[in-house]
Amino acid sequence: MTMPALVGKYKDQVLITQSKKTFSTISNAFNSLKAESGYSDYSGIFENSSEQVLNDLTKYIQVTQNCGAKPGCWAKGETKPQKNSDEGYNFYNSFGLAKAILLDGSTIGIMSYSTKFVGGDCLRKFETGETDINGNPTYKYSNQCGQIFFDSNGEKGPNQYGADTFSFIISPDKFVQFQGDFYDAITGNTLNYEMITK
Image 1 (cartoon, rainbow, N blue to C red):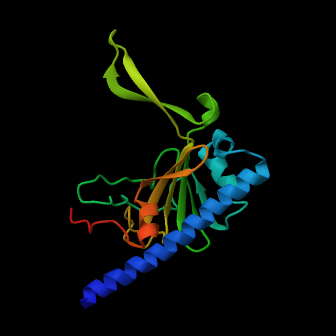
Image 2: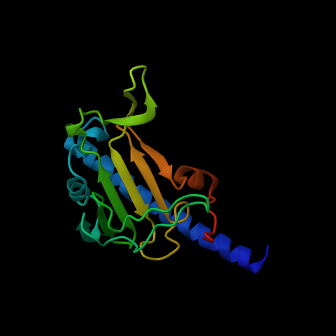
Image 3: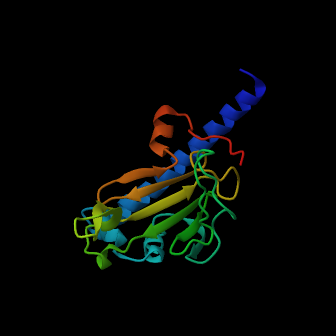
């Protein structure tokens, strides 16, 4: 194996270790909050605003800065996509995303879908882009309570999905990987991203 390949492999292993630690911290905090609040699943947690969910979590996670929904606490600029063909996402000033910097320098972002306003049980309605026989839009439904984003090394690069940044959809009973293929990375101990050239 060439020296650049060895260096790249070492950097990936550092990112995997950091990401596992950050995810463990976040998931343990959610499970502690769920248990101590007497909730049977995660839906009760997400009945509140993004900022309130984050504030509740900080009882179980040590943070150095809680930015709430204000700018800050996230790497400036666009989070790079996982693949060259994907789009990037700029969450630095994203509306409704509550953010904080953890004690180890990692960052977390939370977006609650405030389920109490849409019927509870984290039921979300999405347009399918199709219409029924009367020309009315049709919908599908999905149990989604909110989203969690984390960057395992904060401001440091590469600030890219699949490398140091991952996101999850929170359903009532589990965390579902969304962007970054986190579960695949920790199962295979290999990150899945392309060096961005665009």
